[in-house]
Length: 96
Image (tube, rainbow, N blue to C red; front, side, top):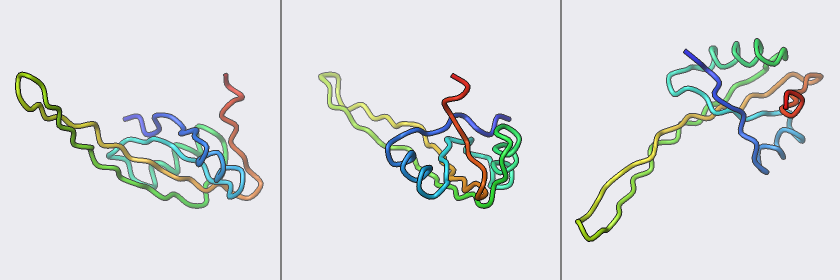
C-alpha cells in the first residue's frame, strides 16, 4: 500500500512550510498518522514531530442535460500536514 501520493505545493502550503516548518501531502485514505510519519521519515530523511490529518468528503455534482438530470461525484481525499523537527527541511524541487 502506497502511503504518500504527492506533496501539495500551493501558495498556502508554501507559506506554512516557510514560516512554521510544516509540509502538506496528499495521502492514502486508509493510512493513519503513524504510517504517515514513518513514510515521511523514510522518504525524506527528516524527523517528524507532529502529524495532522484532514479528510475531505466527495463533492456531489448535478448536471442538467437534454437527456435529463445526471448525478455524479468527485473522489474523497485525505491530506496530512506534517510538522518537521527544528533543524530539518524538505526540499521538493531538488529531485526535478
